[in-house]
Length: 73
Image (cartoon, rainbow, N blue to C red; front, side, top):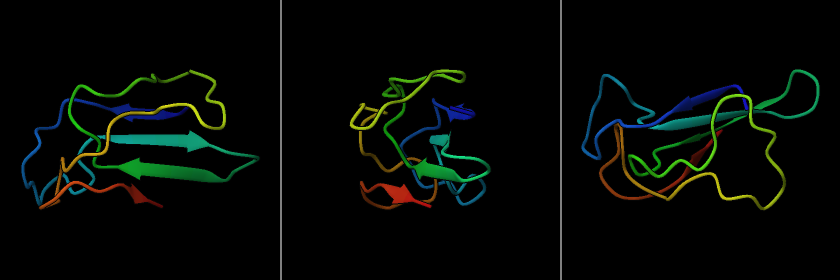
């Protein structure tokens, strides 16, 4: 894992749109981002090796989000 942001409040924040965030390096130079988890819910940290099916955190609405959802990019 290359990036982990945890602790962004669960309220709309147009200046930090992703809110809490996990970015994983896949194969080569391919990355995936998972945005808006619940503050304090991340189960991974930078440098962790993440496996298929592993829990990253809880679905939430941190950042620029009005309702709980997972933004994958």
